[in-house]
Length: 524
Image (cartoon, rainbow, N blue to C red; front, side):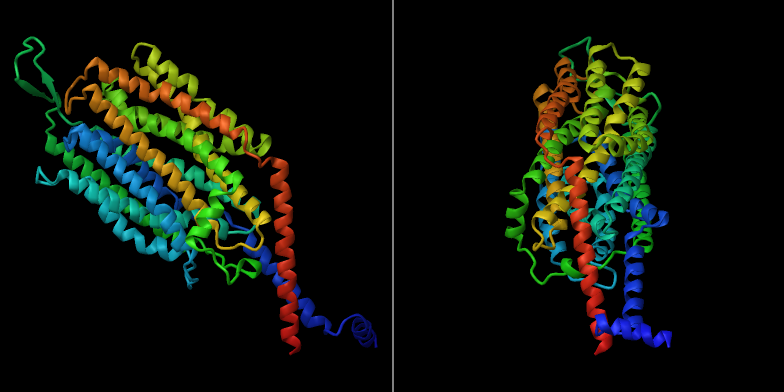
């Protein structure tokens, strides 16, 4: 009787039977909760997927310039062309790949994962060839230019989908921020690993240098100096061994990412029929104010740290005279950055992301000035390296923590526009890579104008002065320009929390519509 009364009462308010509808609603709610929650294992696997980009990036960023000049023995002018064109080409491919990814169809492995899987084997092959010195003298420039551009393109096919994957591992902002913190920690560890592998293997086989006979300025004689008895062939082999180890790690990380992370299929209002064309996406991205201000701010700060990164090996080797220790100085920077990542994650959650930008990015500026103002000293250099690593950590963490906020802000203001996530991420990567290309090209070309001598044990004073300018005054100016732009960045903590509530309401309404559809299907 009670059961009949319950059914009678329900029928007075709805035509739907009670149990099937209630059960389906509970199941959907539980399923959505499971979708949004990420286990620690999933976060770690997702984070490991970011390591290949940073491992290869740190090896190329710290060592490619000195490798092309002192091991491959290219003229600085040609080395600057390779570095600039390679990074510029890499930058151009980012928005193209981002557009193609956004137009990709959903597969049983997801929409981002197939790009990651297919690009990996070709990427490691081209990466290995970058660190191989071809036996032909005339074709070296073409060799390095082709394989550098190919690798950058293939790595873009890995990194752009991986970056956009942040938006598809969970719909909860808190879970995405947590996963981003895991990712940043692993990526900084990746830079440590890349620097350690490349630095320690190559550091044990430092390329021999040529010491000019200063007593006789008219003499063209030069002697090869190599106290350890290491030949140039030994150095070449060391670079190939290091690249082989990095290639193995690259593959293992891709496998862990694929096996441990499940890409969530788009649902409801995100699953729209209308997709932006490439030029529509370009127009909308470049006209969205918060995105432009974020990207321009980080463009200048990234350019500052890339100038420091690209020239630090040469600065330590020649200006500071730390030829035998420069790889350990680089490692100290990366280790310091790794340790400080959790601190910056706590800081931005406690004081806000904009405040973290101001404190984190400016921390390195005084130490950059100190290192060029004092007499070369190994211990002081280590102190400066550790202090600078703290800013490097902030520079790693903050862009990728703030980009999802911009994407969410765009969703709130453009609720009917979909499929834009990969475009936002790809254009950000485009600008940062373009900055990297400019920094490497301009700095190497500046060394050529200053009179850089390939494989020399010492460099002219003009070269040492140029290196000082490239690792301190220029980066400091760029940092402060970037911070001025950040002053206009409009997404505050209050606005970010408001966006979070609006998006949650959209997801709840979408879930309700799915529940209604399920209930109607059960009736039919």
